[in-house]
Structure formats: C-alpha cells, structure tokens
Image (tube, rainbow, N blue to C red):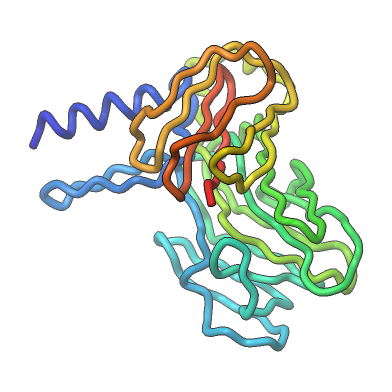
Amino acid sequence: MKNKINLLISSVLLLCSNILYCNSINQKINDQNYKMFFSCGSENFENIPASFSSFETNSWLNNNITWTASDSRTDQTINSKAIVIRNGSLTSSIITGGIKSLTVTTQLKFAGNPGNLILEINDIQVGTIPYNSGVVTTTLDNINIVGNIIIKLVNPNTGQRVAIDDLSWTCYSNLGISEVTKVAQLSIYPNPIKNGEYLYLNKKVNEILIYNSEGRLINKSNLKSNSILIDNLLKGIYFLKTENMTHKFIVN
C-alpha cells in the first residue's frame, strides 16, 4: 500500500509546477484514513439547498467551506447542479493556502445580454469572468495571493441571471520565489467537447499533457499546430497541462 501511495505522490509531482501550486485535480486517496488532495479546492454545487425557483440567500457546506449566495436560486443546471445569481454574489468562508488560479463555468439563464462577473479575493477585484447564453469555462491565472483568502464572485449587472458551476482553484505560495513571471493567458475551446472533435488553443505551445481525473497521464503530444484531435476518451473530466498552465476540460 505504501508503494501505491508513493506512485500517487509521483503523479502529484508531475502535476505541480515549481512547487508553486498543485493543479486542479480533486482525486482523493484513502489509506488508513489518510486523505491527499491534488488541488487546493473545488465546489461542484451538489450540496446547494433543494431546487427552488425564487431568489433568496442560500448557504451550504462542502469540503469544509461554507458558501453563501445572495439573491440566488437553486433550480438550474449547467453540467450538474448550479447556483444562479441575479443581483447578488457568491462568497466563500475563509480558505487557507492562497490562490494562484481559478477556473469556473458560467451560463446566462433566461433572457439577457452577455456580460462579466467580478472576481474578488479578500474584497479586492482581481479579474472578470465572462458569461453568455452558451456554456463558458474560464481560467484566471497569476492571481498569486498568499495566506488566507475569501473567494467572491459578484454579479454587477442588474437583472442578469447567471448560473455558476464547477468552481476550482489552485493554491499559491511565494516561499523561496523572488519573482513570478507572468505569461499570456491560454484558453481552450470548445469546452465541453465530444470525441472526434478538435480541441483548439488560442496560442501555439510545443507540448501538451492530458491527465484523467485520477491523475493518470493518458496523452503526451508535441503539437505542430494549435489544435489536437480528441479521440477515444471516455466521458468525464480531463486536465490539459502545458509548460505554464493547466486547464480542465470535459468530454461529453
């Protein structure tokens, strides 16, 4: 059993970059009550209150984090259960470990116009999250805040009902690091994707690694273009890793 744990630790090291952060994989390992997480945290909204179409304040507990959604409803879905924010916000309780990047899926429900949610960490705006009538998965990288954090997504657009799903974040520490080099943000599309379709990157990278949700490397490719054919993958969650970033994508 200890050998199995060592192999799993090796997988974690493959998925960590410069000991700055662990990538967004939520695989749990159980061995004599030990639990190891490959990422700082995630929220899948499966524990939100029962489906209700009226807007109110909703609170729930998941992974030892309390989430509060003001002016929200619980009867909508994206990939699974989702929380819908109208003129309110989604706020976490205090989270340890800092934050390097955050990934979230959004979708505008009912009528409305495309717009942006505001991402705040410790009441300071660090970026915006786009939404429209389609399913949009966004990663904000290089947030780079150490210590205790509070994550908050604010909907500043009156009357726009925005669903939020599959929220995850990576931890961050500047221990021993004198400077963090920022890189241009990488995005992938379409996401979700189907087998037989090409996954496109918005910029050229030399090599990509694809891991499944168990942290197993299933594809290593040297790219000659900015796309890769997704083929022979089971439905589920996968992680595409480049030299500088990791993106979650879903195969339907």
